[in-house]
Length: 123
Image (tube, rainbow, N blue to C red):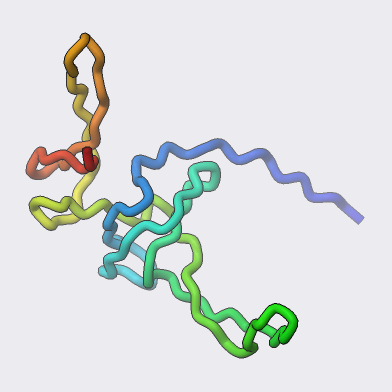
C-alpha cells in the first residue's frame, strides 16, 4: 500500500480581509457579491457569505440539541476567483497599495482602489 505524501503548500498572498465585500468573477456563483467571513492565507481560500453553498447532511443528536436534516452552508472559494468591491465607486476592482507618512515619521501601508483611488481600509 503506497503512502501518498503531499508537498507542504506555500502561503499565497491574499490582500483580502475579513468583512470586505467581494464579487465572484468565475465559477458556478459568478456575479454574486458577499461579505468575507473567513480568510485562509495558507490555502489561498476564503469563506464568502451566501456564495458556494453546499448541502450538509447532519444526524440528529438530542444530547447536543442538534436537529437532524439537510443544512445549507458556505464552503471555501479560491481567492483568485473574487475581486474586492470598492465602497466609494461600487465596482469590482484590483487592489493597489499606497504608503502614507504619519506624524512622527511613521509610515502606514493602505489598500486602495485601482479605479478611483479611494482607500479600502477603514481607519
